[in-house]
Length: 471
Ligand SMILES: Nc1ncnc2c1ncn2[C@@H]1O[C@H](COP(=O)(O)OP(=O)(O)O[C@H]2O[C@H](CO)[C@@H](O)[C@H](O)[C@H]2O)[C@@H](O)[C@H]1O
Image 1 (cartoon, protein in one colour):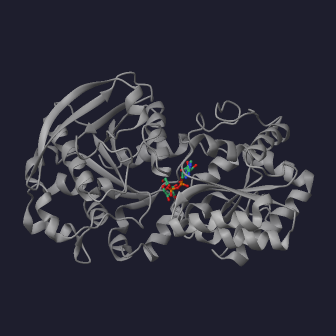
Image 2 (cartoon, rainbow, N blue to C red):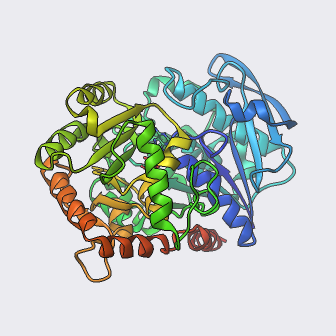
Image 3 (spheres, rainbow, N blue to C red):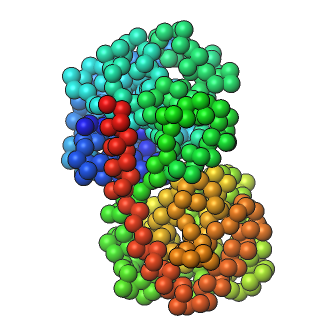
């Protein structure tokens, strides 16, 4: 069986968040499970592109409304990722330093999808399944079914994975002319609430729809940023498959990005050494428990609560704990966190920006990871934290509910709270401090969580079973 993943991100080529991690890992594990998995993504102007060599496997051109674009499809030559990587190069559209956030994102990702389909249309070879990820690739299931040009690809099964239903990629009907011609009687398949909605179109047209945890799928039937009615209508083809982690990249025993490698036997010593280094860099006291947050500073992640959580916790437990935050996003939250340095300087530091190596060092050096998410389809941070022996404090939502139990319950290992509110998070922090003081219990929990198996093996097989059900 051959699967072609189509995605806007793929680690280590280009990563903004969890989507990149998933698309960088899942194909590798699918290959190990006996399938052939490939990835096609845009050719952004990233460091990866500079450092790798490519061969051109296809050249073409496409109309985007009235504009003509030349494009190339490159194949990475070394196969270093463990699967075939194809990148679509569209000069003037996709050769940006970043992945998202450009005023013409609609045009950029439409052109990407059209280029992928044009290339497949001319390729002798065809995959059995096209696996689309998020709304940036949501037009593909629609165009395969109703685009006039692509009738020869109609038989290829399509799957859409929803990594986050908050983002749907809607644009106005005034941009209809950008879409390659299709059976106009089927326009309704593109529409949701009066706009062209790529995620809704994918949910309607893909052969199967899945999201990244079973609990998030259940939540989406009740609340999906306006798509709940549609998801209920398509319930029969919808399922939840819990993400895994790449346990080769995320392994404290071999991680080249952390100062002190460690395993189960020397976890206490290893984490202490990593914490000391981290605290030295960020001028924090290494003798205190360290709480960290890593992620996009947006409302969905509860990042707006962080300044208040820090202020209140330091007031309630003076001199007892430290916080370190890594992230970027909402400008107001970034500013408030930087301001918080003035009153909490000794016990708090923040790194505004994206830093892959620092994130590894934080998972390794921290005692606790905070995830006060309002929405969390799966969440990978808590899985990385578990692997590095860092106890996660999570709101019981989405995939966090599926992956973290509470140490107060029999066999439990994390800390759960109900609401994305300062009060609930601070109460959870109080419980974490108590746990930290019970040295034996804390050490046992660390060992338990490091041994939990969240590798992709199981999920890779679940996806293969899903594809097989389509035949
Ligand atoms: N400033 C920074 N510097 C360095 N690294 C940073 C960083 N900010 C974030 N990261 C990293 O980005 C990843 C974030 O992954 P998540 O799955 O938690 O969230 P995201 O919301 O992006 O993904 C969406 O898709 C994934 C994948 O399906 C779902 O798990 C998730 O719930 C859903 O919201 C982690 O690897 C994290 O370490």
